[in-house]
Length: 259
Ligand SMILES: [Zn+2]
Image (cartoon, rainbow, N blue to C red):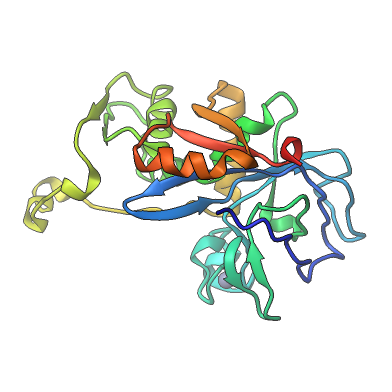
């Protein structure tokens, strides 16, 4: 069952307070349940040090809510790769012992650095999957110049992340290939990378700058994740459907209207 424990206050109350409508996305990776952490809502209160947000702003909190803010990666706005480790939004232990609870709450308190603006004309529910699926595929696509001419994209098995890659790439090239099979079935020899100096890479969401850039891009191009909005009471059935891969492509839990 979904853990509905309320999120404890994080030690940044002076910087940012968002009493938000939480919309959280979930999907399945292999045989392990994962909770995707796109938490969306409206700012209800801000601390005295907050500069980027005001009460009433539509905002989103992503997969992490803290980092050291002092290492090479943090200074380059790649906080997800922080030398001292990022504090994930769900099921992570902060320095004071607080265990994060993700978006399963009616409110969340977070430093403004780890909060993102949602353009006013972008649907809140659609924004929820962006901070997991959207940024996870957007980041490597940008870093590997997939938005440049003469690029093509192959996607193995259309899933929560992959369908966002297809939607994003559709604005840059005409050649997008959706392939059958599953990522676990992909086999290649490292030697095959030598010819033309091919590379293999990975991605785990993105830094704060590129995350905000991705949200703005999706809003400007009217890119919306394909999803099914459900009440929290439907979560168990939704998880059972996920086992059967019976969702295209994301469940989004509407917490506010479930309570
Ligand atoms: Zn750092």
